[in-house]
Length: 559
Image (cartoon, rainbow, N blue to C red; front, side, top):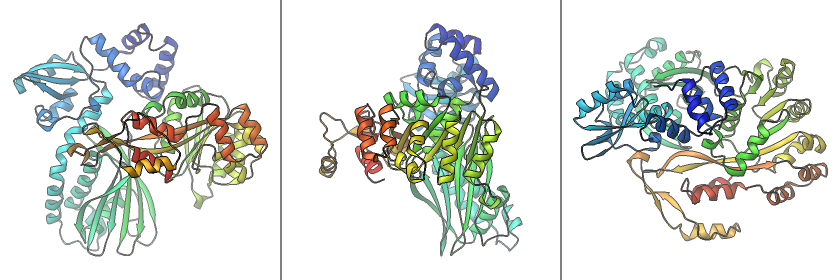
């Protein structure tokens, strides 16, 4: 059930959570972007998903449950068949005696309540959960695919005929199609960000990257890879008979309610072609800044600077630290009918409605600097540059920020203060950096502790020695870890979150920039002015039970 916009406005405005103007602006953007109003309210940080859920539940006079945070036991989940759960948008999540707890998108749906009661012979207690939470919770039905995965693959392999040199025919072979579909479906169920298909001497290894860590999943016999790679090439509109040079492509596939975009990279190897497929969910709503991990003063500084009409907002960190995700979240928040947004990226990861996105293409002469120069003639309000890599791009970006544009971009530096000397090294004058840079975000990604097996513990002596060596003194600090369970594949972790430091370029720091002061001095001044360091933000998340001290030390001290 979707709450009618007029009723939702009445609920939110009367509760004083949302102003009438904010709601009207969000509703106009939702219509223009083709999104649900509640999604826009959440990813723009106007209201949290939990607060929204509680207000709607209060209106419907039922309890609210953040169902996406629940780890549901198989014996409870299977009480309602997956097909029925998806049809009615319901998820069973608990049982007390003869009473079944049922999360529902529409707790007033009498037909769904009556079916569940008759099917389970249990009394049904309805709870409200937001549409996005229901969508995520329905994914728990895919846990069953873990047991079927190896069986399906093995049965499909047996049915693969002897493959000929006709790759087009091999790619259309039904067992090959089934193997690829099963590998991708299992990858989604396992929350994998990447699927690796690697040809070895006597086997083909399928690996998934989950929460930033690669895991071997299954070995396939040699001979399968030719048809598998050919199938991927056909779907990605690549040259099926080209095996000597790298190829990049894209395609999409649907799994239940989700649309997954696949970014394909194929390279020749010693034993055959190797494939990496990046999985990019398109149907999920954009993450809010809170959900990324920005909180407290860090969040305040980012929000204050992202709405400024001009200047630069930079995101720094090593490869794989989530910089692009942060920029995409900011772009989604800023994306309204009142502004024109243009980007130059390498590669384009997600398509954003109404945003003009350009793909870097060196072969065609489209470099970052070339594309950025072209975008400036396209009358944009906001420009995103995927990465500032060289002097020319840096100077054009600075000049764009100086002439009335808001410029978002990334740099490869270890901390926020390090971005400033990086720009100076590229040849940008200190007074230009000082007058255009609004704020710099440094970030890392750490794994989140599995909520199903979290426990308090005391770290080993080596961790205390490491903290002491880094000059970190902790008193009354609580530490948590995941013991490991079936839900997290016995890793103790489930998902990732960012740890951040956000440097606001104050007048004091602007003066330092004109003197070409080193980054350590800039950092010291920023800390005195209230900047929360990335280590402190990590320790705060450790104390909150979101991640482990080992994850924070690994992310901060090893990068």
